[in-house]
Every structure is written in structure tokens, then in C-alpha cells.
Amino acid sequence: EGGSNMAASGTGDPEGLCGVERPGAGGLALLGLAPSAPTCPHGPALLFVKTSQGKEEGRRFYACSACRDRKECNFFQWEDEKVSEARLAAREEYNRNHQPSFTHRQNVERYKNFVLLPLSERRFCQECQQLLFPAEWEKHLHHQFLCDISTAQLKSPSQLLYPLENKKTNAQYLFADRSCKFLLDLIIDLGFRRVLSVGTPRLHEMIQSKASQEEDFRVRSLLLDIDFRYSQFYTEDEFCHYNMFNHYFFGGEAARETCRKFLHQDNGERVIMVTDPPFGGLVGALASSFKKLMAMWRETEKEGYNNQEMPMFWIFPYFFESRILEFFPSFSMMDYQVDYDNHALYKHGKTGRRQSPVRIFTNLPPSVIVLPVEEGYRFCAICQRYVSSGNQHCEICDSCTSKDGRRWKHCVLCKKCVKPSWFHCNNCNCCTLQNHTCEKTDAGCFVCGKAGHKRSTCPSLS
Ligand code: SAH
Ligand code: ZN
Ligand code: ZN
Ligand code: ZN
Ligand code: ZN
Image (cartoon, rainbow, N blue to C red; front, top):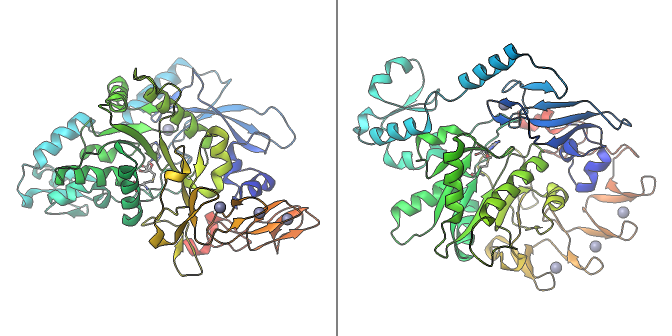
């Protein structure tokens, strides 16, 4: 997680996560998906370059697209490395062995049979995260398991499965019910009837369960996610095992076709993509995959769509705003604070309410995104969008400038609004924290805001 502090402070990212792929910042830069990239169990590897300060060209290498933790996938190869036939064969063997024990097809069959079992014979192994048939009990006897798995439990897999918690790779932050409902209501009010849920299992689940319970509920969802555990609960038309960092469909052409069909099936039903990716920092990789999904949507022969973009909600922390806009200039950031059940990144606001740094980025006109007034959002008639109640319209900037919901103040020297806790340092020639060390900005911890340590070692996290 290299990246210079200057690059980081420009985006308001206190930890410099955004610097990861910024060329020239020193550290790691993402070059992207190369046509002849080698593959790991997670699909084609991504090409990176190690840059050292002041040196233009670093050595290029391939690494796993999905796992930033070497313990989860240690795939590594120098770009110019000669790989022997023997090693290639071993790698293929390794990739084969590292696929899930059941295929999606098999899991769908298992589910069909599972629901036929009487309640007393339905078990779920918590250690293997797997539905168990009586014949399999013996093998899992010493594992923790749940009994009497109800239909309701099968319909809310995100509650049944434990959230994956590997911080670097696959931290699953599940929407709080309030935020999930808000998103779904917004989607419905905007007239969408199909949702491509990319890394949003809880939204998908809410849509699926409403669709099965309410007769006049017309919304459909397709979940794309790397978490294969979900294949135990959804058919191939409801879930595709997908890697959003390299646009890889694990289920091959058939799965890709499912996605394509979902995006094209129309009958005047409008599609929106909703995604809530891990914040690891590979914004460039995500953007390139999302552009491919958008292109898939655009392939539809329907006239009039040619110059349009597939409507999208990209849910991500506010300090990534400039990175997202680099790739999607048509997007804007909404003030709505997305809440989670299990998020470590909360700060406690003045009101005692948890302050989430996570926002919705969208290519829909901001004026149509109605935020709940009862939660303190208001409409700014000048900006033509809903903003946080604390977000004051700045006359000089001519916009509502706060990014974090607190009232920001205008600095005449910087010619922009800055965080309330910042002051203008004449030494550094910019606004920054009071207790910074000049030139070497020592931004506070991402989690607790205190200086002296970073998120990874924050005492409040343990
Ligand atoms: N807030 C969402 C969950 C977001 S957590 C909800 O409640 O529905 C991030 C999600 O992205 C997880 O479901 C995780 O499994 C998925 N994910 C992580 N890495 C991924 C990858 N490389 N490709 C696809 N999905 C991924
Ligand atoms: Zn991998
Ligand atoms: Zn305004
Ligand atoms: Zn201002
Ligand atoms: Zn200033």
C-alpha cells in the first residue's frame, strides 16, 4: 500500500489507499489485464509494475487479481520470466485442484433435494459453510453445525453464511437493513425492474425474497460474486461466480451468456447495475470490468440506447471520488451514507450516530436521487441535488462542498472548502491537520482519526 501522502491527501484518503495504482507515486502501479496473462485459480492475473521513487521503469509482474493477501493466493510471475513446461503443467493442475468441490450445477441439484428433507434432517455445517445431507453428517460430526434449517434461513443465505473477513481480500460488509431497503425503494421508484447485483448479495437476497413472497413484485436480480458459497442457494439464472477485478466468469461461456441475456431481456424493463466492491484500491481494475459489463449491456440491438451508459450505482468510500471520476466522468457522488451491519470503518459523529464514509456514485442525474428527509437530508435548489443536513452551500465554490456530512469551511488561500478540523499551513501552502509535520503530512488513522498509526494497526479494531 505505497503511495505518497501528497497524492493521498489530495483525495482526502487518510491512508493513501488510492496511491496503490497511481503511477509515479512510488510503490505498486496497476497496468491492467494483459491479453496473454497467466492464470491462477481466480482467472487471469493482473499486470503490475513496482516503481521506486524517481525511477521511471520498474520491473513488471503478474499477481492474483482477487487476493491481495499472499496467504490466500500466492500467484506471482515476473513478466519476462521464462516458465518451464513442467511448471505450466503443475500450475494447471494446481488451478484445477483449487476449484470448489461441487460445481454450481451439483449445488443446485443438492438444494432441490435439500428442501425435500424434513426439517429435522436439514443441517448446515458452519465450518465447511455447506448444506449437509444425513449421509454426510458423519464426516462433519466434529464440526459446528446448525440444525433444522428453515425455508426462511435458506432464503437469507447472507445471514446463514458468516461474512468473510479477510481484511485484504474479501471483507464482506453487509448492508444494514435500512440502507438495503433504501436502495431497493430508490431503484423501484426510479422505474428499474432488473438489477445486476455485482458483489451485493444482501440486495440480491432482498429482491429474491420479495419476488417469492409478493405476487405483484416485479423486480428481478442476478448476483455476480466471487463468493461461491452462494451457489448453494441460487440457480445458474440467479447467481454467477464472477471476479470483478478481471471480469472473469468462472462458469465460462454459459455463465457469461446468462449475464448477457439478463442485461438484454427487455420488454421495456429497465436495468440498473449496483455494485459494492471491496475497497482494496484497485479502482482501475474495477472500472475496466464495469466498462465491459456496460459494453455487454450496450450490445443490445434496441435503438436509442447507443449513446447511453447502463445506469449504475457504485457504492464506495467518498475519498475515492476523484479516482472514480477519472474513469467515469459522467458519475457524481451522492451524500447518502450507506450503513453496514459489520463495518469497521465507522466514526462516531457528534450526534452519536455512526458516520459511514461510504457513498453512492451514479451516472443518473443527481436530481432524481431522492434522499430521505427524515434521516436529515435536504434538497439544495441551487445544486439540484439532495445533500446532508450539515452540508452548507458555499457561495464562493457555488456548491454544497462537504464530503463527509459535516459543515466544511472555505479557505480563500486554497480557493476551496476544506474539512472543519483543518487549518491553512503557510509552510505547506495548503490546508491540513493542526498537528501535522510540515511537508510530510502525517494523516490520522482511517479508523479512529488519531495520528501515529494506520488502520491496519488501529487499537480500536482489535
Ligand atoms: N454491502 C454488500 C456486500 C459488499 S461486501 C451487501 O450487503 O450485499 C463485498 C462483496 O463483494 C462481497 O459479497 C464479496 O464476496 C464480493 N467480492 C469480493 N471480491 C470480489 C471479486 N474479486 N469479484 C466479485 N465479487 C467480489
Ligand atoms: Zn488467485
Ligand atoms: Zn448546494
Ligand atoms: Zn467553498
Ligand atoms: Zn487552505
